[in-house]
Image (cartoon, rainbow, N blue to C red; front, side, top):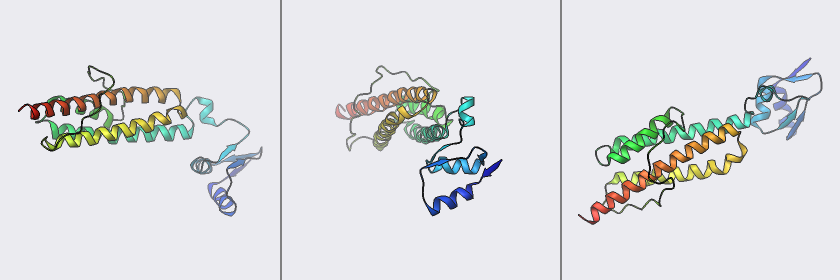
Length: 196
């Protein structure tokens, strides 16, 4: 039995880049070599299924996407908590909604909270006017970031395992509800400013 190491693969790849790698029957990959192939998106066939696939764990690419998704959720959660703290004396509804989702998301639980909302699909978030408190501009920017993140992960969803897709769908539902609260808070504040 012979083991192919990461340094051997790196040397071969440096000499002549390749996108597929076939192992001989009596050859195995070290964990570093396997990771090298995965990182460089090189397909390989060891004559058998990957051990992870045999036990039902997600494939490395799927796991990497899942980890990236959770990283995005955690960062958005931190931003929501910050917005909640900053808006606590200005808009209690916005602060509560942002904190409820943000606290769960920061812990890596993208579907840990179900927010109350009258409508699952948020109205278009109104652009705050200059006479509104700056916190509403911050909320509108966070809403735009939520939209971009939702769009990206929705377009990536087809490449993921079913469990990860379900988790993402739960998160997207929660994100729509946060967006609804942001839109409602901005509209309410604008109405109060307009009507004195």
